[in-house]
Structures are given as structure tokens and as C-alpha cells.
Image (cartoon, rainbow, N blue to C red):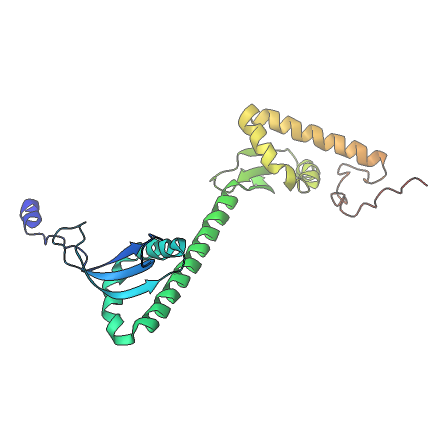
Length: 231
């Protein structure tokens, strides 16, 4: 049955109209033309008379226009049929509008791809619970699960670490690399050690409070007054 349908498949036909590039600056004409194609085999071109002509001053501009037209083969026959109806100038304006729209869509697509790539490599921290236990987690945008989970026996222990971690987004990606190179235990130990060092430094400077959460009122140093210069 499959062989029979394959035998009766309509053979592909070459495009009825095709764009042709003239980029020889030493020639009489630099630009792009849309011509009827009398070739009988797919992939071949036997050009007839032009149905649309666009001259360019610079060969690079002609190549850019031609390369764009190559991306829109479904429009070649449409443009050819519209040429005698709307006229050369109007068709050129319409094609320029299509080209601008394609460029806009391509820019939007690149922006979306860049945003997705940025989100995929962005590391975020979260104060949460994991299996009913207080925890601080680190996760990368492209991952389904956090790559680091630090659990605690009591919420106040989790909150103590979170008071410091939440102000460290500039370190999250570096922590991910440490996790990749040295593993989760080494990263957890490093984070705890850095937190304790920060606590001690801020307590000594009078910028931290007492109790089991020394950094609970800390703002990450954003409102810290600049040092007074020596007279």
C-alpha cells in the first residue's frame, strides 16, 4: 500500500518564478530581478524575461535583498502575479514592508532565544521546605530540580543562612561552578564559612544585631555609609 502511494506521488516541479542576483559591479546592472523559470527539473533555472526589477547602487545591498528573497520562496509566484496588478513601485514598497517585518520578527526571535538562554543559566536561591524540613536551595533555570539543598533542623537555622544568602545573587553563578568542580558538600561548607565570616565582620563593625540571626536586619550593605576620607 505504501509503495503504491509512493508511485502515484505527484513529482516536484521547479519554481515557476525565481530571483536572480546581479552583483557584478563592472556590469551594466547591479540589483535583483524576479524572472519566470522555464526549467523542467527541480534545482535548475532557465530564466525568462524579468517580471520585477530592483536596481541597487551597491552590490552588498543587492546581495542582502537577494538573500532575503531566498528565504521566502513561497512568495515568489505571489510577487510575480502582483507585479502587473499593483505596478513595480508599489510591489517594491510591499516587499520592503515584508522584509522589515521579517527583520522585526527575527530580532524578536533572537531576543527570546537570548532571554531563554540567559534564564537557563541564571541561578536563583530560595528559602523553602524540602520534604518537610527547612531548607535553602540553589537552582539553575534550565534544571528541573535544585542542584544544592541545605536542610536544617529548625526554621531559625535556615533563616540565619537565608539572611545572608538572599543578598548574594552576584555569587550564585560562581557557586554553581564550585558545585560542578568540587561537589555539594564543599559548596555548603564554603557558604556557611562565608556567612560566619560576614557575621563576625558586621558584628565587629556594629552593623549586625544580636541573637541567633545576626543579619536579620542587614540590608546587604546597600545603605552603608561611605567611608569618611582622611582630612
